[in-house]
Length: 113
Image 1 (tube, rainbow, N blue to C red):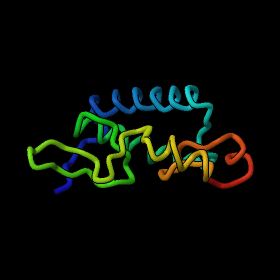
Image 2 (image 1 turned 180 degrees about the vertical axis):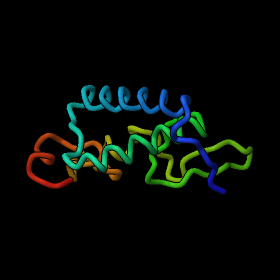
Image 3 (image 1 turned 60 degrees about the vertical axis):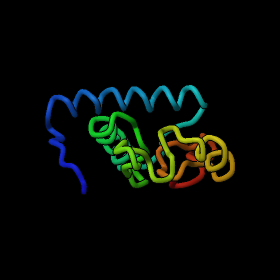
């Protein structure tokens, strides 16, 4: 069951700011850039912040979060941002991660991510 969260709450707004700084840091660390489509970035950042508040980790928002047999939350595809599939395969091979927030500079310049 999907948990509800007040996105105007101070707790969420604080986490949203932290998540924006987190994604800035990830881009800088890996030499990536944001998707040129701002609505994609906004949606992914909001999803990451939501997961951090609800589950304590920035699970990729494009994948289901499930409970394991011990009642702990995990990503159904084992994706915590920045996820290994994005780092190891998606971005090097396709130029962008599955969620679309992180792109190579070349890909962002030549595509609509």
